[in-house]
Length: 103
Length: 453
Image 1 (cartoon, rainbow over the protein chains, first blue to last red):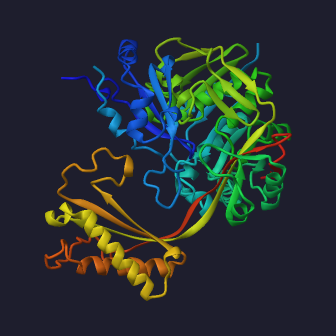
Image 2 (cartoon, chains in turn cyan, yellow; image 1 turned 120 degrees about the vertical axis):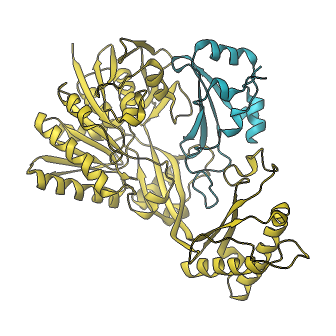
Image 3 (cartoon, rainbow over the protein chains, first blue to last red; image 1 turned 90 degrees about the vertical axis):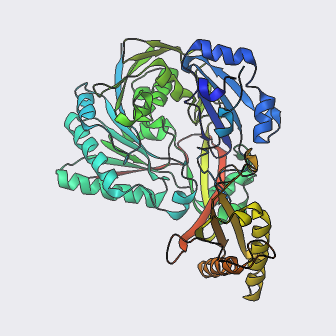
């Protein structure tokens, strides 16, 4: 069975970072898990860009060791708050990341 | 060495632990602060000019904090009052505060920081080229400014420091950054800005700094020149390096840099250390002053009136050809609109298919997965309330009479959960301003008013 990101980071969540960006906080239980995911290369700009339909150069990925976390930030599809908005605070956009295979 | 203790609760009206708060008071804090706003709910609260937090919940939190602050004779500071922090929201909060003070028999000096921006001043700033968009928003125009119901600027620490200088016992601020509420007291005591701002940022979400967010513990920051300690004041709650450092990146695009009007909190060299099982010490935080101060502008404009309906669809034949059904329904509704003299540029009709891709839209990878039932939210936004209701009714009646699949006799199609099955949701707003305004002095966009209570 492949390991999925959601197995290693069940606390994975996302929110708006202001109305223009969507940001994912991906916290791990241990530094070993964090390093396993970094080494696997599974979390990369191209993969995120493909899932969320944005140019890969607009995706920022940070390794934030104090919180044992990876952070991913990308522009929202449209600025939050339009008539067609479906998720004002960007709270449920992380679901596809749970299934990303790590190894 | 100077030591400043800041006692924080999360958003006012969300509740907090009373015992935890009492324990916090026993630590003799130098201030009590609480955020009261957010843009997380979208432009509705700003545009509509009303808080969406129930007054009774706000009142409970305010009452406990005010009594505590007056007992210790320390400042009580609320930022972004009434969720959106424009004039009507601030008035709402002032009225509750005055009421609470009267009942408690308390007298004090109250500072009110107004964040509203006049249309003229924003337009002059546009002319000077001092306004730029944040992220993927388009450039601000004079037309958008004129259409805005309210435009507010987000205050940094300086207006709060002025209010403290004026002897305020209580500060009610319009829109402000969350950490400014707390940083002002530490900065005024001479704490270096990197330490003061990062400490403030670590407590401005209250119990979110702990591992037990639902426990509602207030959080105490003990701040000195060389760093700060974060701890919960409720027995049983704990702060960990993980829980405290996670706040530095929360709802912020970049974990290393958090922008404020006067500069950026820089955390590249911040060191988080677990002091014991419930306290975290942070050192090495820096502050990078901005070459020119900026304040964020938020504006909301009305774009129409919303009328919606939720219906269930269970017919497997209809679900198998749902897009075709919705195309036919849209076409019929458009023709109905035309027949009653509503032109297509006066409304939008959106079908939100819950159970398929309503949450993620085009980004939904499971869009074509099998479904056995969906919730269809029919969403009409039109120029007037009457138009939106007319179109919604037309869409519902057309949908019930439509063939579920071409060639199969019409059979109702929609399971209605309510009677009447129609939600009048009132005015709809969108962000008209989400921009940065460059200023010579970060105090400039704000007005300070002093009231004796």
